Length: 152
Ligand code: CO
Image (tube, rainbow, N blue to C red):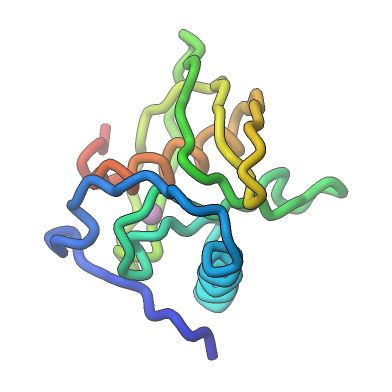
């Protein structure tokens, strides 16, 4: 059993708050990210953001390159979307905090994201398709935004 329970409900104030930047890149952060990862796996998610386990901190975990040989799990701390491409894509999304709810959301196909790793190192990644979608969905959580706010 994962230690952390998933916060649910489109009107839940924890899910609707603006999250605070992470300031300490310490063992406590690494442990918290591990626990978020466990909660995500247990719930079969592709991503999980801190408010979804009850903490209003700017950190999430995403699965990138799903079902490809280079599939990876990546925590992103204090992420910032540096660039969004002009081309948009519509696809279906769901959310661990809104079980049973699915709907189509339009998002940029390509993005460039800046984030910090668990050691506090600055990273920049260019992502597209599902990878970009998952990151944008989780980034929205840090601003109190849910996919149901953006249905097309
Ligand atoms: Co979500």
